Amino acid sequence: MDVALDLYGKAKRFGTWDPSDIDLGRERFDWDALTPEHRQALLGTCASFYRGEESVADTLAPWLMAAPRLEERMFLSTQLFEEVKHTEFFARYFRTVLPEVDPGAYFAPNLQGVLVDDIAEVSSRIRRAVDQDSDSRMAALVEGVTHYHGIIEGMLAMSGYERIDETWPSAESFRGLREGFARIREDEGRHIAFGMDFLQRSCAGSPRWRETVERTFDRYVPDLIAESPDLPPAAQRYRQLLAACYRRRRRDIGLEGGEPR
Ligand SMILES: [Fe+2]
Ligand SMILES: [Fe+2]
Image (cartoon, rainbow, N blue to C red):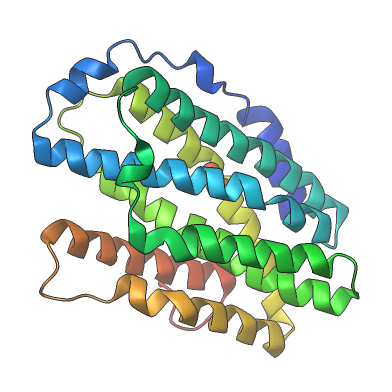
């Protein structure tokens, strides 16, 4: 079975949730019950996810135009719709639950490059490559899928979900926010599976594309996962989760140094 087509079928069946159906009626009580430190940390996480979703929703269209196979373009059309819904969820959440908060003030500035500026730049390059030969298109796309599906979704987002699941104040709290995160995480699982399959197939027969993937990882991963005794425990933990996700992505693509199955 073609993986992209299979994931397209799954997106049609499971990607049908509506962000505006999620009940946010009790969320404010949960925010008001947080300690100032916990509130600050959770705001940082939510604001960074919001900015990240907005950024990937805004930049994805060229990936859809450049993908060589119809099955890949079919899948990417579902991904584009889903990224827009994820952005809608966070926009609605802040507007409804935290109207006095400016999410931009809580966005983690160290993510501005990888999550916003650089992905916009790769997106422009893929868009230009759409009108060029298939080799130029593929070069831009392999780098773009590594950055988008491998690093942003496959490392940053996945580590973010795991981190946040370790820090909910109680099983009963934040039901709306949790439901949103759970739905988004399910969608993201399909996006990552698509991207890793694309890279695995691309790299299997080509040292050149393997080199492109490695170069893209090398540009960001060492800084993202570097541990230092000066970091607060929460930041250390996040870096460990990022490193674990990185090994999983390498395994998915079939690169050396991946996590054993
Ligand atoms: Fe998303
Ligand atoms: Fe995604």
